Length: 331
Ligand SMILES: Cc1cc2nc3c(=O)[nH]c(=O)nc-3n(C[C@H](O)[C@H](O)[C@H](O)COP(=O)(O)O)c2cc1C
Image 1 (cartoon, helix red, strand yellow):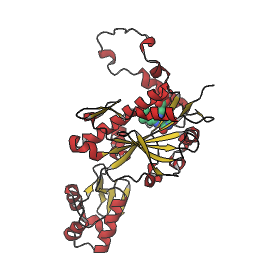
Image 2: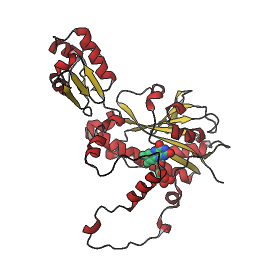
Image 3: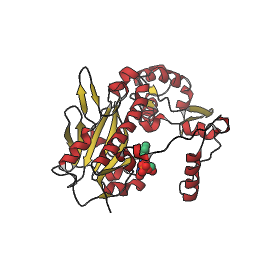
Image 4: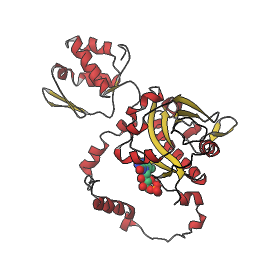
């Protein structure tokens, strides 16, 4: 929280004065003297403001109160000095959508409603009546690669035998660099051939031949795994609905965005491309896993904060997505 470091108002945090005495910032309601520094404080924080700057600019606020307010804003990710967690990037989108949408919030506890919504979704036709002519296309699933046809999300895995070192190595080889002339390329596409996604693997005890339990970093350049920590309670980070899948899997994979790699070139869009890159990596891994007799389940919902210290990430690295993997269960 260095006094001279510039912090910025998080672009996804809205604020307004509810009345003369209450400041609403995101979901928080704030009262007291600090309310009087708005909107000035906000304008300055949009340009970049340090704690020293804030103490100087708003000297009519007691120093200890300003310091406390400053820490409060940082703790709540309202003042930021590094890129935001992916979860915060899209704040407020739902509110705007809800304000203009004919759909209401889905009751996910009601299976009938969820199924109706899913079916409505797949039947949709955004051009509808405006379409001039519908032409039936030929259908021939034989032309689709078997691995693509057979891939499906699995949440149960064969726990009786470990993944062999050969299969484990081959699985991750698809994330390694395959050729390097002027620059490296991999088996999957990445915006600008920058490959800004770091892959971390948690190997469970006795689930991969010859490997100790632990958290590893996969180094795609050397095709090596490097142990970072021996124990890590990954289960704790999973939401209820995914704990069972975690209990079944042999390995967990975590994809982390290194913003230093793509933001110098793509600026803000670097984050957007990284999210796309992760999707492509997951699908490439899932299809390759299929050919190796493995199965996968992408994990979108994970409380990464609970395990983040084990990863020893730099501030410029942000967790994006997870995947559980194990030997395919054949009944
Ligand atoms: C971005 C993303 C997030 C997902 N998150 C979860 C998850 O948290 N838990 C889970 O069980 N499945 C998750 N899935 C898997 C989907 O539920 C699954 O792909 C979908 O039901 C279609 O089934 P299929 O993959 O077998 O074709 C996720 C998939 C994607 C692409």
